[in-house]
Length: 340
Ligand SMILES: Nc1ncnc2c1ncn2[C@@H]1O[C@H](COP(=O)(O)OP(=O)(O)OP(=O)(O)O)[C@@H](O)[C@H]1O
Ligand SMILES: [Mg+2]
Image (tube, rainbow, N blue to C red; front, side, top):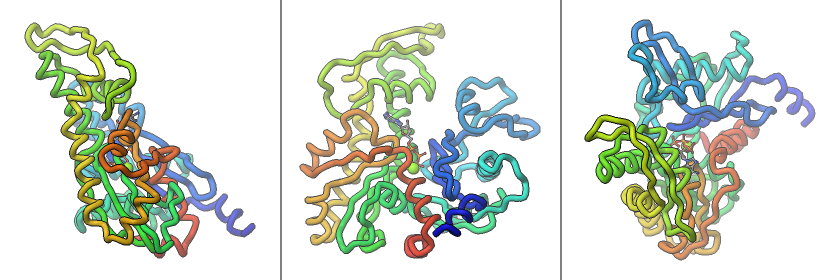
């Protein structure tokens, strides 16, 4: 025990949630050491990395011609291999205070719907970023461990993780995923839905970051008690001139209706396909929500009214996956059971 603690202090091993929107890292024995947007700014000609993480996110949509701020992950998987590798390398060096000799072992959470090719890409990008050994854990399993569900018991647990790129629902029992379903509709699609709604209705072009801010501020999935409004700025497509207007929560709820119904549908299908004994457990225990997208106002109320089941929002939805991956990193027996 003491040895483990001391070893933990020197170890460079990491648990990583390589998300479409955010990357989080836990260093063994140190807890969460990194929480940054998965964004990289690169020079378009010499391909030099100019900024990574929150610095780069500020640049999204605001770069001059020779700088591109990109998101290397899309729909939960690697969309741009080189940029993703550069990002992982940068983050690993950052948490190890730029000591160059570290070759950590890492546990990485990946979407449950991921293909062999996509798995290979995550492994290869990590290895070329300097990682010694890679263990992959399915995101819903990591999230379930992260929120401390009794995953090893012979009893059904349902977890719904709504991230930036993917929504995943899984039923877990006896340390295994009994059923899982992953759809590539999550926070990003919600932002796009808001963006195109405002373009359609007001002929106003807003940026991705503005769309995300609208979603987080007045976005909702269920009617709110009190009307919420927000002033937004964009470019009028008729005149070409910047313009300000005020929108309300009802409009944004309408804008979000499509991606939200896709999420609800995913949950309903999962419930239909869950074996009866496990479904009975879920009636008692309900569905646990994790991931940043689950923080949308009223999403829990909507799911409660659509399924009549108890809906429990994780205490820290953004950290659930990395917390679970971190627990697997600390517990070899658990890691052996849950890694894929
Ligand atoms: N308060 C909020 N209301 C609505 N959405 C939110 C809120 N806070 C964060 N989000 C959304 O959560 C998403 C990010 O969540 P998270 O960090 O769990 O995703 P990720 O793990 O990076 O993505 P994925 O798991 O799909 O790869 C973003 O789309 C963000 O806009
Ligand atoms: Mg995630």
